[in-house]
Structure formats: C-alpha cells, structure tokens
Length: 68
Image 1: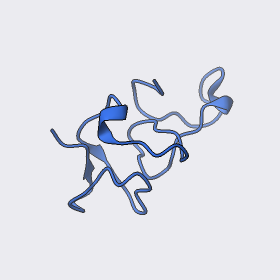
Image 2: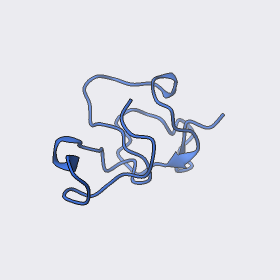
Image 3: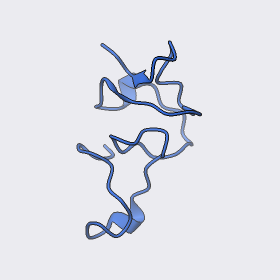
Image 4: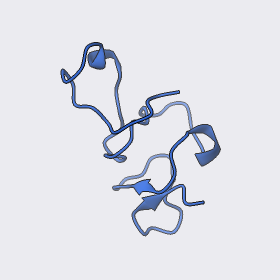
C-alpha cells in the first residue's frame, strides 16, 4: 500500500522523495493517477478531499472521501 499515515512533505523523511502523494488528498498519501483507484483499493476512510479529486473518492462533493 501507499502509506498508512498522513502525507509527508518531500524531504521530511528518508526516501520520501520517491513517494509522491496527490495534493487532492492532503491528510493521506494516495499516489497521483494512473492507475485509476477506487475506495476499495486504498486503506483510508473519511479523509479530506480537495478539488479536482482525480479518483472521485468524494462522490457527494462534501469534501470527505471514501465514507463507510
């Protein structure tokens, strides 16, 4: 998987330069597309989502992704 905790900023931890996180999901680390991911493909639930939401994790547009 891509990371279990909050997104890290480049240079903040060893090896973080090779781990890219999509800025649309600032509180979790989900890699930018491709591939296309669904909520079932990631371990995170109820996280903050910012536009443009490339994976469409926030289907109802309330700013919260992959609600249970």
